Length: 367
Image (cartoon, rainbow, N blue to C red):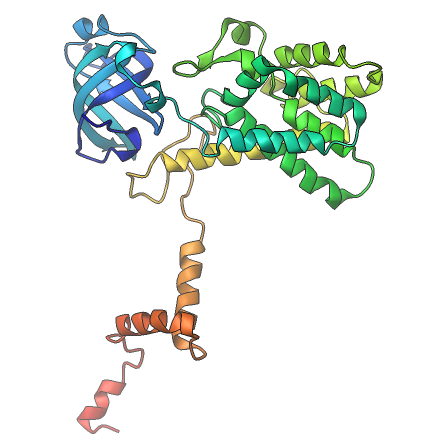
């Protein structure tokens, strides 16, 4: 049987496929009856699910991170797709293709590795370039750095997400620096962008559903990242002491505020820029992903986003603007060869419309 992907599920579809169990929580309904909250995932996304009946028996059959054969029916509830499960059976790992179940960056890993190499080779600072070369030469590190997601739930939640996010910040950094002229250390900002989340290679586990490791829960990616960077800096002969402090400060302060888990607030120009670029890129990706998950919904608004604590409007004015452009093409200057067919189509659609309400009265000889 062909794999039925989360992204392809539509309202009222019969679901009969294998998923990876991302979350599993037992709950109690208002009438005192137990039920199960689930979240299934595959490489195309994830979907909420409910088990209303026979929960005590089914609860013993599988756990979080198991592969399960699911039978049920899809429906849209509160603008979000969910699956009501009628039957669920654990599937042995050797009977599934792991490539079907873990989401991946829309960008190719090999393409991003090449871009990373080019960014490092373009660094003008010898100590910073040597530092990054040491990271690139470590095959074990690169394997983790290129595969890790950038987060568990907030943004870039897919394999390769960390590398994609880091490269995006490096590119944004290179764009920002010329706008403000002299006084900004571009190489320091770029390297800070590439390494700001490096601790996530050990903070998160991503062999199955993405989660936090023991080290991640006890230390966090900022502490782990500073340790990794400090270890490499010690391997670079005569690495400038102040430059090392400035780079580590960027890792320690990139969350911006204490309440956001930042041990330090940004106190340099480079650290301040990194904080805002990181926040912008993560939010844009997170919002886009939130909107993309609701393809089945016809509402112009998303469901409530728990982490951002708001609803998002899906429109951006581009469709309306495009329509106005088409109307101008149809009613304005003579159309070009490229627009003549479009003009004819729009004119035909408007043939029945008359913006002169008194014109029909001429047939009554009143004028």
